[in-house]
Length: 270
Image 1 (cartoon, rainbow, N blue to C red):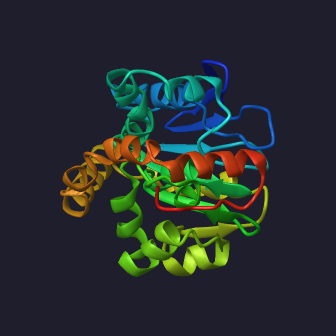
Image 2 (cartoon, rainbow, N blue to C red):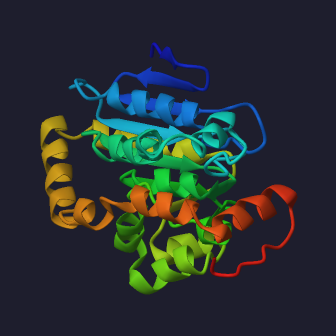
């Protein structure tokens, strides 16, 4: 089998295995965090499948040891955006929403193969895929509330669909960490694999999708998503504006500053 590899920017590659594609993102560091540049590259990768009638399944995976530690709070472009005019900031704040929506809208079956930590924006991106496979030693954490932020990127309804409202509150509002076993029990992931083998298990699922009538699979996926997600945009259409509001608070400044200074935050409701 001939494998074709295409680079998307600095950090993203697409491997094409006949009717299966593997999208890998790796910044080459420990965190594999989602900078604005990486978000745009991953969005471009997702949109490259818009006119692709041949691909039946797309696997999304991070580095060999990390899916992602989430949005990069140290990203210079992100830091500069905090001082930008509101009109410009609103556009930049929609970068993550565009990313997750682009992955959700891929017509082929999408499978997130998760190794290691899957945090914040990484969990948001994984939730935008159809299926999720996690390594046995992987861990999940949605810490936005601990940084004085709301959870945006259209992610709240996606997580509610997966785990239900009570568990969604534990994940999002209480920022509880959970391992692969609990993620499977709660419905956040679909399968557990041995460490280092999540892409292999995802390939098995992808081959199953590729063995089925491609148009019918796409139509069924579209019907299921229409039934399950009909109100999602209505619910989350303003979450980036809510983020902008939260980012104007003293608690947001304290949350980010305490994270960067590696100390406990002191919230006051300001």
